[in-house]
Amino acid sequence: MAKKRPQQRQPKQPSKRAQREAAAAKATFEDDESISSASEDDELQQPPVTDEREETVEEARLRRARAYVAEQRAAASDSDEDDLNERLREQREARSQRAFTRIDLDDFDGEACARRAVVLKGHRGPVTSVCLCEARNWCFSGSKDNGLLQHDTETGQKVRTLLPRWPKPANAAVEEARSRRRGERSSGGDDIAARQAREAEVLCVAASSDGRLLASGGSDRLIHVWDTRQGTLVHSLQGHGGDVLALAFRDALGFQEEDDDDEEDNDREQQLFSASSDRNVKHWQAEAGSYVETLFGHSAAVSSLDCGFDERPLSGGRDRCARVWKIRDETHLVFRAPHDSGLGGSVDAVRVIDRDRFVSGGDDGGLSLWSTRRKKPVVTIKRAHGCGAAVQKLGEDVPGPIPRWVSSVGSARRSDLVVSGSCDGVVRLWTVGARDDAAQSLDARGAIPQLGFVNDLACPASGAFVAAAVGKEPRLGRWEKVSKAPNAVVLLPLSGSS
Image 1: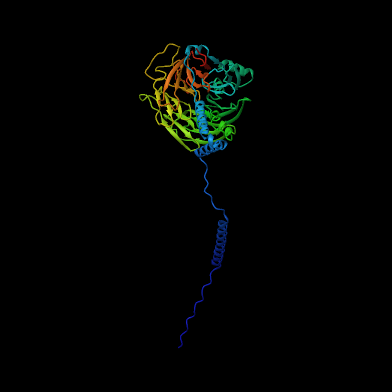
Image 2: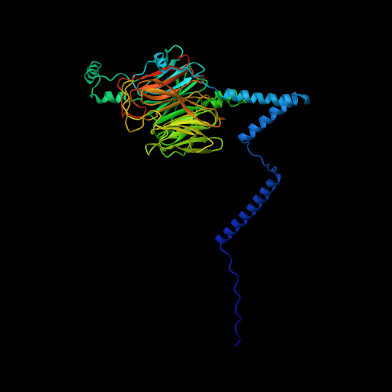
């Protein structure tokens, strides 16, 4: 019986689904090849990458110096080479002398100065801050009464009220009767207090170098930028999470003698820095009302701020540190304040003297002179304003164990004059040596009687007078009160005081 030959199995045909997947994979592979070849062609057509980097500040300064020397040498002949070197040396010495001036206080008389003092009236509450515009002889001041005033330093008259002060506290019964006559619904004296607290206390003010813009800040956590020529509000800047405690414009006047590049003059004058109880320092462009950046580093409230000629703001806070911020290098220097026998140590007042030095004061009663080249203070005056409670009457000092708080410091920029204020009944004057002196010093030169809390100080570059923001209460609290002190800005003349 013949065997059946086994039938060969036919290969299984792929399903329609498998055929579709294979076709899709083939199409994807072809697309990838085309894209890869196209990208390779693009890479071949790209221009070569050049190794270019942004010029640093030091390199730009060196380039301008070399260009200036080359220009002077091209104008001079070979025989005038020695004359050229001598001329450059004389220019450098003259420039150094202009950068640091000495205020004549040899015949200073504090009592005569106090008798010639000019009181700028208009505030009802304690004056918390003051700033000057030397180009226009203006003085701006802010107060706890919500007032923001502008005065003329030559005449002593009020020029403008930028922000009106709160009205006098109204009697609840009188206010309720007025409301009934107007047909309004009365709900007691709570509405009166709420209406009076609708605005915020002004805690700090700062004016630009040209006097066109004024910045104010306070407990409303806003920074208000004003046009001083029109007396109008330009911007209200938001961003801080706490009370705005300090403001500072970059000082552009110092560049007029040191730099010949005018391209950034407007930017320099509009650079605004703010400090707050939220532990941050912020950088703004005031005229445009734009935010630039936030400077982090402080671990407590930042209560003082200043900015000199360079783009290096100086800040001080309750973390016992002063910090110099190098904006262009994106770094900062930290200076830890010493404290007297464990008492305090916060940096509540700072002021730039020149490019390398600044002064600071705090709640331990110490007044310190610093150099940015050293981490520790060059000179420290312990208990600069004595110890004890606030003086309630001139000439009656009741000593105590606790040093008096140095609440304010000021200086005539690029000079040897430094002033400090507290609650001991005087504004104290100090002198510092030139930054090139071998031995740095901080010497007491006199005192001007002034009753009350000196919450802020400002001096023009000439050192002709001192503007003191005086109040019955301290700037950031109400833990003590001097009942007989004025709530005003007091101009204390220094020249011709004998």
